[in-house]
Amino acid sequence: MTLFFKKKFFILFCNVLLGLTLSLAFDPYNIPFVSLLVTGLFFLLNDKIYIYHQDNYKLIFLTGLLFGFSFFFSSMYWLANAVLIYDNINYLLPFVLIGLPVLLGCFYGLMQILNLFLWTNNVWRIFYFAAVWTLFELVRSVIFTGLPWNILAYSWSWSIYIMQSISVFGVYGLCFITTLIAGGLFNFRFQKINIYIF
Image (cartoon, rainbow, N blue to C red):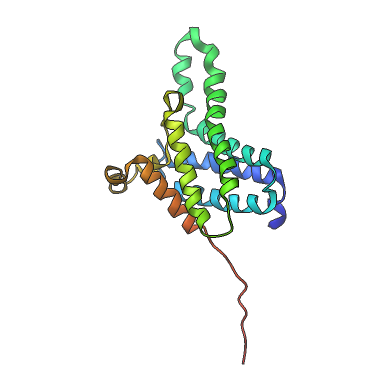
């Protein structure tokens, strides 16, 4: 399996697959715990990228870009319907279907670059991972008037009880908690167990 993580194509393919899967956590699907699964696997993939490709900034950026593109392409495709209704703005269709997901995916690409600088081999990387993800969700929501759609916290809309926590932590607080839990759950370290028979 280690051999696969050395291959750039395999890593990029995994990020596309994770981005597509993350959209299942949002409307209209709202599949429970998908966001934890995807975010946790994304965290694990970052571990492998740090080990085998930490000097490849282009690859690091592309992992985030493709993850973000596939996520927004699969979760916001319905925006094209608003363009198709009016004949005089049909030319905007490529921008809505491709351009917007690419633009939003750039936030994840930049997030990955910052992750690379902060990534370590110790447990603190879980906190950095959650903090950086939340920071870029916030930036994406406010810069250039912002587009605060499909923030990770909204993936909990299937549970009214968990969504109630937004009144305490806020949307970005729940986003931070989600990524923190996902990173913690997937921070497995399997060590060789020596069995001694007396």
